[in-house]
Length: 223
Image 1: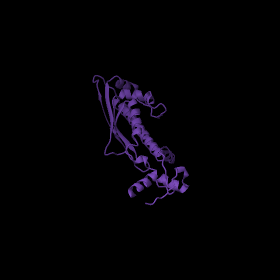
Image 2: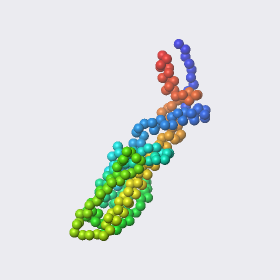
Image 3: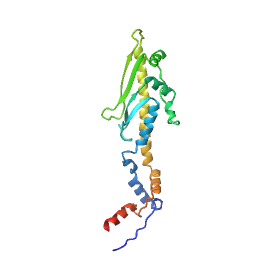
Image 4: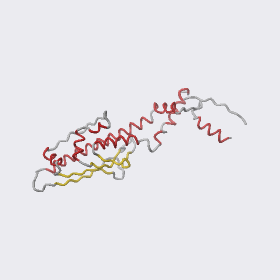
């Protein structure tokens, strides 16, 4: 039996060219998992819940980040439009994410119609859904007027203004989701993160950049 002596190195001890090779090799190690986005999903669902938006994480989809057509989408229900309006106005998402800022459009509609909604004279439901996993939002809504004894001119126009505002808020949230996913992806594939992983998990390499785990596996196979 012959013995081979191999020098082993920490990442920072490798030649610069070898370091670059090692970084490229491990670049996508963390994002090869199907679960790297779960923390981002969780934060997004929590933020939306503070705004009275109900989301099932299994109904969130996204594609990549650097090609035309990439994006995200989610299916949701706004359980109570009155609470939703109040929560957006009060910035209730900050109960969960105090440093998060959103530049939502201001709701511009006739206050009389808004009062009808808030007093229950108009029932309004709103939801988004996924269609063949296209990466933008699809909207569905309906409303009913519960006071047939009164007539309010142009009420449909005012309700449509509300619906367009809701769409704009949800689109802003969807853009936020996609940006946060991209931020997490870029964090996990950055040089700094990979180098930190090498240090924390005590990675060791040959002078050519091969992991010692592979050398150990080779030795076991030979024996």
